[in-house]
Image 1: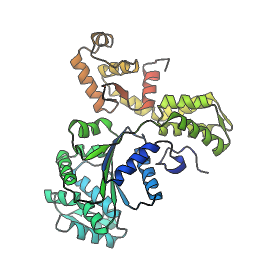
Image 2: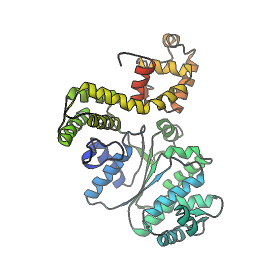
Image 3: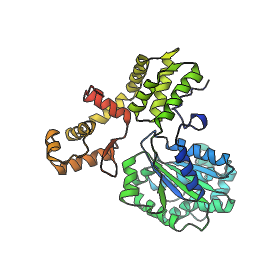
Image 4: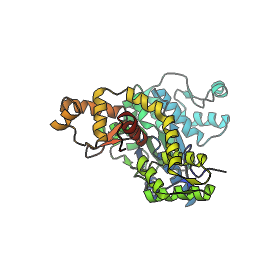
Length: 384
């Protein structure tokens, strides 16, 4: 029997909780031909939202093709181009002969080829017979438009971990080429890009600080799932999934601890389910929380080991509720030396993707379990 608490894959349908508004907004934006960007911490539900939106759109009768290029292990411009092209071609072709024809038809005259030997050895759909040249970049970036117009279909291209483009040599040149592509796309061409990233500050650097794709993409922020919907999901999951009961106050506590992060909440509920036979007590939930922490603790310890004394001091200040770090009393209390040093420490924590700052320059620790762990287990703050 399937668990009602899914955390190991994207979810849709009855397993998708909340965010009906975001689904509607994303569907409307795509229907209008807009490009969308989403940057949220890991496991915040970006891909589940996309999948549920596509499910809703298909249920309403809309027809389209979707392809996904995962850039998590991209380190060169060639990596990007091959991943991108492979994702597009696989959305329309399913056999070696079709792959070869697609590469020939749409990428002819470039250094991209279909190498049968490499395909049968490694599964490579697109290979290169020369180093990347500007004409190759332009041809590959235009591939979705050419295929969609030729096939007469609407195409949605999803990028995962889009910020990794900046890790490649020539990454900024790639971004500029993509900007030019979006600004000059053919009128009425039914192609939209969805750019997602889990390194929030790196994505902010691209889209907010450097202002790439200004007025070419629309940022879709993900609001926290409503606590009431999460509680109903947990209680209903235990009751109808396994005939078990749970005090709603415990569900409220889980929502507050994990700040309504569905991935952590589903993981906790799943562990509780495996540890119980009937009633989910507070002791069972605390044991389940301990099990989850034991899984993540090596990662958390590594994160803390990588922090300097000043960075740890700023983390402690954040946990204490400080939002203005440059005042003389805060600098003295937390031994931060100077306001200039505070700025350097903030930037360091942002680069490590531990903390981000909102429009009011207020801090947010991005991983709720790490926030609990560092407060309770590292700084030994008992009220957490």
